[in-house]
Image (cartoon, rainbow, N blue to C red; front, side, top):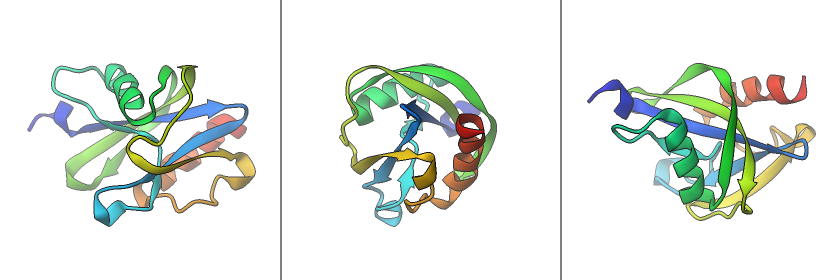
Amino acid sequence: MDAIRKLVVGAAIVQDGRVLAAQRAEPEALRGGWEFPGGKVEPGESDLDALVRECVEELGVEIVPGERVAGEWPLPNDYVMRVWLASIRRGVPEAREHLALRWLPHHELYDVAWLAPDLPIVAAVEKIVWE
């Protein structure tokens, strides 16, 4: 499997001083944990094309990717995650593939049970958005 198939992209969607978190529905081992929306990059697809596609599929919104959050974060099974700040161009987020969505202002950022691999990403996003 090549490196492109091992890449996951995520969107830290920011609106009105809040960031969007999504609660996993599956797989069962991750059910209930919170993450940034996104998913795997398909073969032949660019990172940003995958990010936009995943937000349409998972949330029903068209996003505008912004600044990439510096770094790559390791995930299980040799995947790595890249995350971008994003804004919504069109639509209202719906939990199409998640149990729930929640807009988190800074003072509530850690009020949800983020998945362990997402915690350093949350901290990096926090520095960009609120510092």
